[in-house]
Amino acid sequence: MAALVKGDRVAVLTSGGDAPGMNAAVRAAARVGAELGLDMVGVEDGYAGLLDGRFTPLSIRVLDEAARRGGTVLGTARSKEFATPEGNARAKERVAQQQLKGLIVIGGNGSLTGARTLADTGLLVGGVPASIDNDLACTSMSIGVDTAMNTIVEACDRIFDTATAHKRTFIVEVMGRDCGYLAMTAGIAAGADAVIVPETGKDEAQIVEQVKTTVKRALAENKRRVLVIKSEGVKIASERLKELVVKEIPEVDSRVTVLGHVVRGGTPSAFDRLLAARLANAALRALAAGQTDFMAGWSGPGITRPSCPWDPYVVLTPLTEVLAETEKLMRGESELARWRKAVFQEVERILQR
Ligand code: F6P
Image (tube, rainbow, N blue to C red; front, side, top):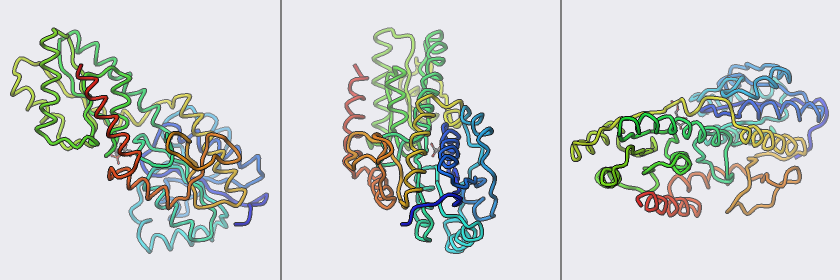
């Protein structure tokens, strides 16, 4: 499509679950857009704000300050209305009213699904992956994953102290929706004794067995603490898991900590800020050059497309492909899904030693 020209209006929105580093992405988009002579504007509360026509100026000074903080200054939402035909039609009206020429969508799977439909309107649309779950395909990392991982590791280090003092077994539940990436990577980094993720496909009895084996070994070795990290996507409640284990090993003193939304907030790591800046920079420049209907992802193993001209680590993939590959990843049917599953199973065995 035709390249953008100076003065063209480009909007930025953040959508879905917030992720630390979203503000850094908005800031980069605002700064690069200003550099290219574009009229940059923010949308409040994601697609919900787009439907209501709630636009806001993007002040670089405000964003400079916000880039160091978690959450999103633009606000975010999961808009059910946008996904309806009426919602879609209203969004198109708003785009025309605001004379928007381009849109940058910063978010996860649901947000990029919305971006895909808007690209059909003739608007130039670019996606930037942001979700602590790391469940998006065609990017080796999404914005927010690194910070969330660090938050979990820090929390586990604290739990180690109290667990060791009391000779206890802790089951720590972490976010990640249906994806065990966060639990597994944080588990390795924190030195967990066992990690339970949905990808390995265990049933309740097998999970209980896994934890029992871990606890029995720890007791035999007179270990003072056991740390089990469980991904929220695993279909057994953490309290129930604890009760089933304690029922069979009554001498174990066990506690459950659900980290929940603590994992999603907090100061973004330097890596997340830089990742956000580089992905948003490439997305904005691609949009300005007339490209549309893509996600700017971080390259890595298995990402075979060539990098974009603006950053050797950033790869632009059509949104349709991103969404299809993500679906395969979550169904366990892609090459990446099979690799992750194999690695998760191997790590599980290694942690049992
Ligand atoms: O997708 C990000 C995420 O934090 C998931 O890890 C979690 O399952 C979900 O969002 C929680 O959503 P909500 O904030 O709507 O409760």
